[in-house]
Length: 117
Length: 113
Image (cartoon, rainbow over all chains, first blue to last red; front, top):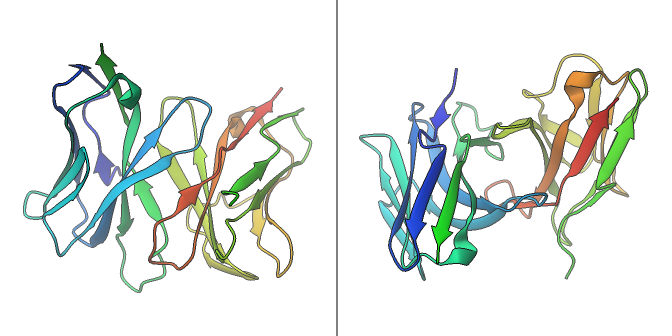
């Protein structure tokens, strides 16, 4: 039962262009949405987040969009840089009644982004 | 300003041995989470702890796995009688509150031979 899906295992983009990473979920009880970036042999690094009461959050080159009706989350990186090449995970918080899972994140499978010079 | 510290970074155990993975949260953080990443997969939640309390262990295997976060010292993830299928990267994260961003350590790569 996969509640969070990143359907594109990989994405290749030219330097300077826009990278769009997508994430779909099934459980409407998720209430906080995060993106993490991960290099090989390192832990995930927090990038940007958005709460369920918003539909857009921007931080420099990174923008996260949330479409609650479609249960869809996306991360836009513009302009893309070679240093952005990494695995990107969406991670969703909440997802169950009672609040005991508030600190728990449900991760997607990840998308490998490669930005070519 | 140290981040989340995990040790060891790499751990090799023979089948049947015990593995102990340690996690020191960021300063001021009292919430700790353990995740496991199998090859080619995303991170899977295992357990969420506050000081001396297990808040949510819904992702922990029913047998051989246990976790603690004592009043003093690091959080420990313990795997008894390891099997080859336990080989994975184990990540710890910490947060200041349960509703704030979690920051991850660099992980412990466990290899069972």
